[in-house]
Image (cartoon, rainbow, N blue to C red; front, side, top):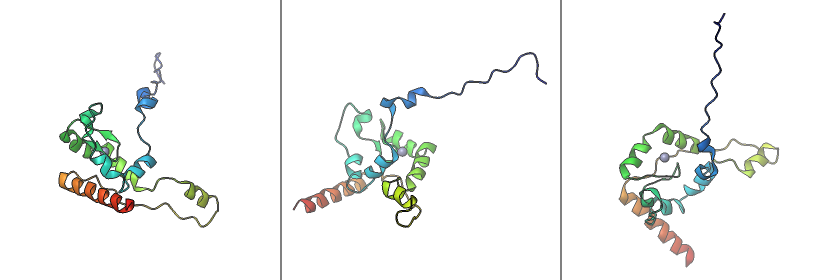
Length: 142
Ligand SMILES: [Zn+2]
């Protein structure tokens, strides 16, 4: 059994860079609130910010990522990572209410599942969303 050379176990590669605070991305519950109707249009149509990749014009709502070009964003929508993220977002974010339900306060029910779709790509659709959000904001103000 085995030769004179014992195979050293390979150290598990942990990408330390990914765990640095500055590389930390938004948590799922933050993204969940971003996906709400009142917040999403603001993120989909951001003001030009030269400090952000692609001037902040190409933003994936679900992954909280900026892309340089529209093409890069579109190809990102087809990646495994993005699809996995959509799946992760299907489950409602964990909340205090759920924790209390689980600990016996009230009756427990499973967190809801919902369908999450990739954000609209069509400019017209986005403009509509932004318009709706603006008009509903005005309604709230008056
Ligand atoms: Zn994405």
